[in-house]
Length: 372
Picture 1 (cartoon, rainbow, N blue to C red):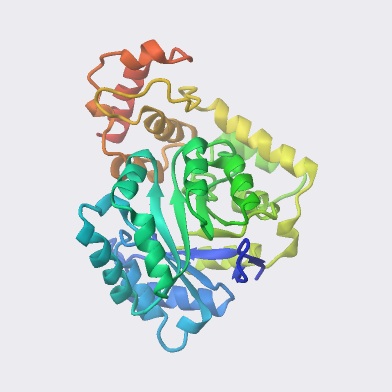
Picture 2 (picture 1 turned 45 degrees about the vertical axis):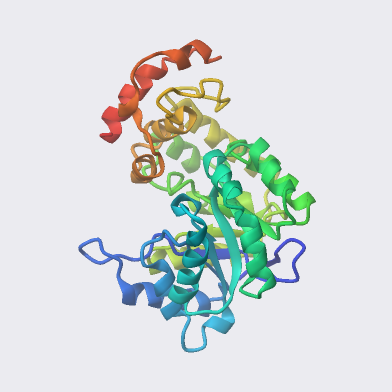
């Protein structure tokens, strides 16, 4: 297993972290407790020393608490997150945090994050002064290291980084999303501040490894170096020394074994110029399959219906480019408060769009594709 320092912290973490959001399920689609515990323990036995969960992940905190009994707790750093999305009162802060300690069966959480920072939730975080609350928990010894996970543009990322002396942060990054959200620019900015940077969505929710379009598969097949799409995606990230840790949501032993092989091979840390060019060729091919060339500039906003138009178009583009991945539908359905069906076709967004996209038509198509 490859290990790295977590930014300025005197902490060495496995380069591969276990993301406990998509745990094993049984034949009826319910989380399999025994299989989940066994999988997490095998991960730890294999050298993974970082397990990531969140208040909103079904059963995850409780199962981690059970998995880390019998001497496993001492081998692992636990990462958990404060759910801004459920915060409604001052009392919620204390009750939610205490509930997490209870579920995990611990008195201190190693890595604690403000969950899913975006513009609306950042306003809520400021309204309830969540940073001061968590800073106090850190002083009380109930949190070791404090950070945040992020899903918005670079300008907000910079604002959040600069407002507090964070230990680390967590951003979405992969070879397709170099300039999406915080992006590579955010990685550089955070590491210049001495922060550790954890990467989520290294496989773009599985889109880079599942249902690969024939045009993309042809590029992989003709490559001089033969690797799996997962190997290529991880290699692009691991080769960047500024990356502290990469999270992967592993749901079975096959995925765990495949990832362990990748993250135990020193060759994964090295990428050549030709390999970089190959990945850019693949990225360009994926982009050519995108239906609506939204740049994410946000000029279309605000929408009178409060639809997050650039985000919605991103999910719909993924739906088309990656051959209808279930992850795109899940994220569209569950992570967006408003959907394509909420569009009233006022066309106000189209008047402001620099790309002159037929946004109202795209909203209608997205609603039909996703059923919402």
